Image (tube, rainbow, N blue to C red; front, side):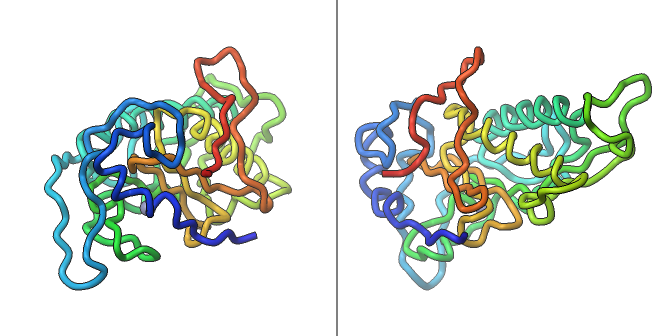
Length: 246
Ligand SMILES: [Zn+2]
């Protein structure tokens, strides 16, 4: 089921530019401020676009390798490193090794939000990433696959949001489990990304979009239902709060 775009977080943006996150945010969860929170995102709806100057750095992954080097806002780097660590952990649990590559569709791009042209995209600040999937190399010699994983997974393979998110049978269903486990764990970790969009949200059937906008927004759907964090465990994650926008 496809959900409509929601306007609320964007309407709150001009206020957020003047107020610390947590006092006027779309989510009341107190959270550490982020250097780009004070940059106004409102822009003229049409005409030439001036993107704010932010410090961009080349980034090709740290805990995992990216499919290509890309420009990101310097403050996003640590968030990406944390994301890579979580992706490596989930992959190792499910496939017995981390991905060999994170396949991304881009980070920095000076543009408006297509559906809300009065606002800058977080991509315009290098403050967002689009993830299409992950590539895996062969299982390293001497390592064994986790229980229940078919022997064919010893070979390399690709996992893509577009082809595997909805899969329910065969090898593809294992890829779906990987993608959903990863997304749930990222949703639970409010110290990694604030905005998490994916399948079921307009325009996001082929990728996850993660960013650090000055508000919290989670729009990823599994069979028409919002994806929810995993049940609380002994990890440090806080999962006892709603991930839905007001
Ligand atoms: Zn994006």
